[in-house]
Image 1 (cartoon, helix red, strand yellow):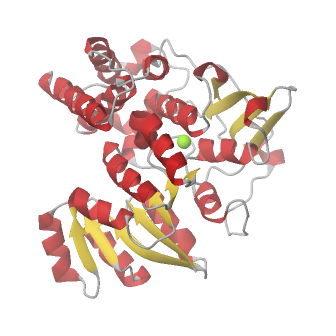
Image 2 (cartoon, helix red, strand yellow; image 1 turned 180 degrees about the vertical axis):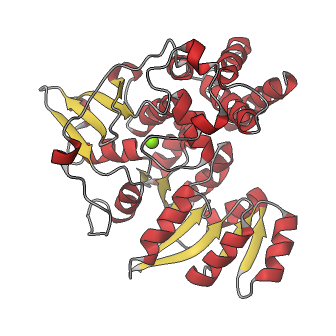
Length: 377
Ligand code: MG
């Protein structure tokens, strides 16, 4: 039995990971954490019988205690840190946002394999996290479909023979639109992703192309590659999940259905593969695969993310924190879609970048950026 724990088990990735576990007979759940959906967590506890669970705060913990028996219930960041040190072999970090960073570092120190589904961990503190992973000799296996694709394309290849990474993007629901159109889009339009079913925050990030910007920074750290060797390609069909070009001109791509359970399962079985009931793609039905350059003048968040990656230091942490707050405001219909773009740029311009920051400096930059965003509304 392979022992697995999940931070963020009631979210989109968490639920799909449990679906893989449900259909396997050699996977066991040790711990689960959820932010606030205790009704679903209760069902998961009854089905998967974890030893330990954690919820967002003390009040939720008390409510959950009334609902279930036979499981240790923790709460808050301390609860997630305790789960990070449990006796599982693989920790899925599928929480949304910066909150994933501290428990991930904790799990690395406990020499666990990390199935990384929390982009913000590498975006904000990529250098620290990768150094810590190296020091502890642990693997960080990407769950994000693009990074899983790149990871698979690099299987058996040599780092120094990579020419570039071709990171694909669907382009989101607003592909082809110009600024004046984007100023009028509604929340419900932004929540309609053409190919993928995902959580709300990442769906908005996909519509603004910020998601690709975060993935760009994530790829830099994960694959230890120079920024000028990463290229974003818009590929509206979402069939090619990313590619690697090598020095001899060969390009290796990973293709498949846009179904997150494929990269989730691969994170558990790699380098092996396993049959599943996910529908296979029929290339003759798809017919064409298209690629185009992203419009970074219109979709400014992608441009700002690439610039932040170039500047490094605390810039990516500020980018991420400001974006998290702005997306939350947009989801609450407090600001327009393009306000995300403009306010993000303002905060980045105002920030005094700290080169090679330590963890405290990263957390402080994150906090500063959130306050700046909140101040303006
Ligand atoms: Mg992705």
